Amino acid sequence: MTASASLTTSTGIMKTFGSFARLVKYQFVLDFFLALIIMWTALEPASRFAGDTLLTLLFFGLGQAGVLFAVMTLDDVTGSKDGSDSANYQDASKTQSRPLKRKPLLTGELTVRQAQLYGYLSLAFGALWWTITIVHTPNKSLWAILITVLLLTLSVQYSWGLKLSYRGLGELLLLFSASAFVLAPYGLATGALPALVLTEGLLFGFGQLLIAGYSNTNDISGDAAAGRRTIAVLTSARGNKIFLGILTAANLLVIVVPVVTGWIPWWFVVTAAPLIVLRLRQYGSFIHNGHALLARSRGVVTFRTTVACVLLFNVIHFGL
Image: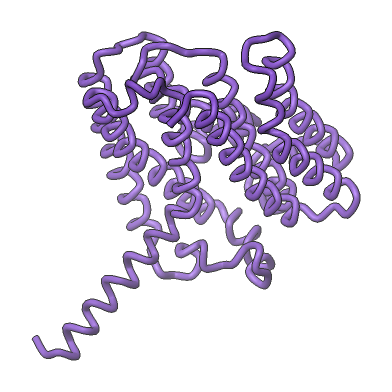
């Protein structure tokens, strides 16, 4: 093989790798892996570096990668087949908020067949490693195993298989799935579910849900044409604003209620102050200007701020 041919082959491999990385939305997959960091810092310091704990988290993390790759890939497969991605991204491709290159099936870099096979293999990979996790962990808590199994079987049903987001259940599924990425590994590592971890799991879940809620608001016409029944599609513009307001209020109540009841330390609300301010700003600006993609972008910032606030609390509360 000549040097030029070798360079061409290498370039082609790198291009294909980049296409698959964008197919699985690697930036958002990395965001979901923050769940493992949250639950690790919520462990008692003495158990964080225990061999069983670290292996449980390693095995779970490998499975999580496979499941998330499958979720993102199969969502794009469905969006490509029913035309919703084309409808939702063609105009958005002109903005930095939603570049078309995020969708390699639309740009022609990958075929639907390639993506579908990759999605199935990723799901099998995830199932294998989560099975190993359950077999390995000494803390075989029934509730943690059940949540892991439900996370495996339901998360990919968002827009593939049962297509729950096409049946008005997408928002509920997303809240469960995102929260479970904190709760399941903690339960498998410890067998317990303290109020603090439940609170932090729900905050993680609402963080993702309040990104998707505004994204769905922007995608109303494309989703409606494809038969995807999100809340934004099912209700009026005013009803959707009320729904987003309810989600915003629920997100804040997840902080306030455990503090008021004494389930978690009172100063949790102090470390969560930046999250509270950004969440109110996200909703308030949307009500004022109706810019869904801007609110979505602010949701990403708010989600990452949520993670930072939670990590700060855990480090102070539990120590390093």
